[in-house]
Image (cartoon, rainbow, N blue to C red; front, top):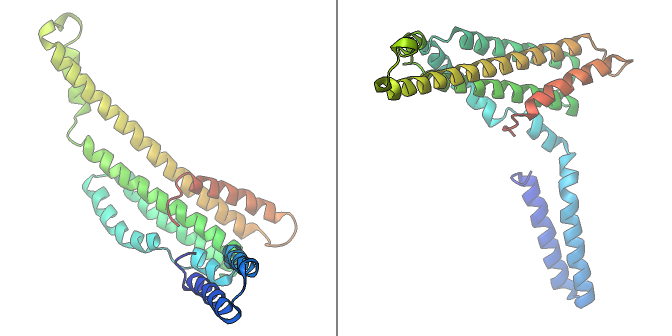
Length: 245
């Protein structure tokens, strides 16, 4: 809002008007205070007025965000990283995420006008969920890299030889080191599973919301309740990782 030329124009207009009134009328202390107060009120009223304007809503919701523009380029690098990590599940999610967002957008365009605030709200929520899911995939790549050199089966085998009757004090330090490495592997594996599950939930939310939009008669009867319920679910998920404005 404050980066908009309209906002700067409004600020400049109020300041110049105030200066012109002071120079023209040379008001006294009381009148001057009143003029300054009027200027402050006008500036305070501007943000809520601008927030309802079509220019602001278009910029907020309908114009592709910088994050979305970067996502198209980022996807290529992410695809390469996932392939190098031999992460088939990550590659599948990357492709399906694109399909889900495209399907959601197509349904949305057929149900609502691109100039409507509701259209922008739905599209913004879907995009944020998409971007957050891509972040999850990037985190998965890092987690996989951190344990890529760890052989879990070999660790278990080596630790098995250090337990029971074969255990001795000489191997205590080595055993502790191997157990730490195994714990690290298990933590990263669990974290990866959680991130994959979050993405599955996000994709399900996109599908459910698109289906609700497709089945609803916008503006009529009870069907809107279904759409609202689906959108609340989608927006709640997006709000957990709301980084893209």
